[in-house]
Image 1 (cartoon, one colour):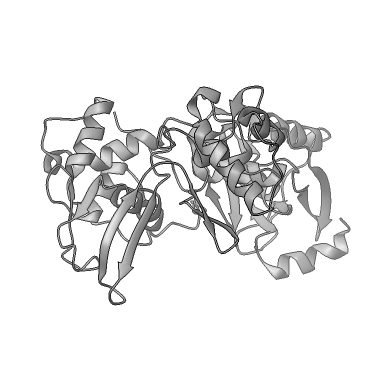
Image 2: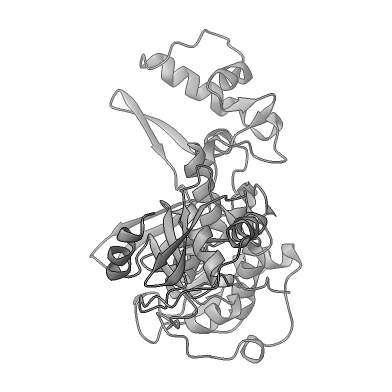
Amino acid sequence: MHANHLPQLLAGGESDTVEFKESLREEALQSIGAFANHRGGTLLIGVTDAGVPIGVVVGKATVREIIDRIASCTEPRVVPDVQVVTLNDRHIIVVQVPEYPIKPVAVRGRCYRRVDSSNRQLSPTAIAEMHLASTGTSWDAQLAPGKSAQDLNLDRVRTYMNLATGVGRRNFPAGADPLEILEKLELLQDGHPTWAALLLFGKRPQSPLVQATVHCGRFRTETDIVDDRLIEGSVRVEENSGGFLFTFHKHPATPEMLTHPGTGPVTPQVTPQVCAVLQAAEQDVAATVLQAAAGLKDRMHFLKAYLEPCLRTGWLEYTIPAKPKSRLQKYRLTAKGRTWLAQQGEIRRDAPSERYPKDNLNDSPRKSRSAKSNERINEPCK
């Protein structure tokens, strides 16, 4: 970068591709990781948050030391372009970070994404989704760990083959081996089914995909739902006006389904947090109590990723079912949820009100400028 371009960059302020730091400390390294997981960016070292150049001391080995430090803290290793630019007799270090092709890049084992002018730590689910998106694959095309062809209902495969042949969508030979057909459809690889194969033809897709269910209901009014029911099992295939009707509820990739390269399996925190939510609901409690039990700061993430799925699966229920959005709404553990907890060996005898005080949690917690909105993943519920 030429010195003539620096004043324009400073005048533009921080953004999703520009960051100012007085020195190369931990937050600066997090910005580098966030840039690599975004569309690249430029870090200016020796500049205040307000965009005032104060300069840094530069030695003969400064550039090499910065490159080595960044490479040693990132996985996969990021090797940025580092230059020293002099502006008004002050040395500014310009670190230009390219977008990394295979995401996410981890900084000391944690992954960040760039949101406006701040960095936010990625949840395990977001790590999985980002990695799949960057590799051009989808979750359902991945092999299901620990599953084999014995977990598939071959009669359902034969039903699909007959329907597809009957309407002319496919031309499967009579008496064809269902396993060979699944291999050709890339739903089975060396005897191991993909997640899609389990959802379509699995004997029991809800093991381990407990949220792979179909929630049905008939709306009497905009808010009044009748005939509410939860359907478990594999995807149902029905012939419908010369075609097929596939009905299923697909959830985004969860950490159990992916091992992130460089950081190992990202599995520990999902199931313990679900257990913590259900344990806290042994008495009628508000959503804030359940959120505190899970140890989550982001209210919307808690609602979408934990509370709503627990309601859909029938593990939790409303205390005021006729008014789901009532300000007096509370939640309680159902018999189904208690059975599931017992199967996990997670039932606890102490009262949830003692373990999880009713803290006042803001819907949008304030984060300081210096904290850069880094979201922490809490420790699993013990």
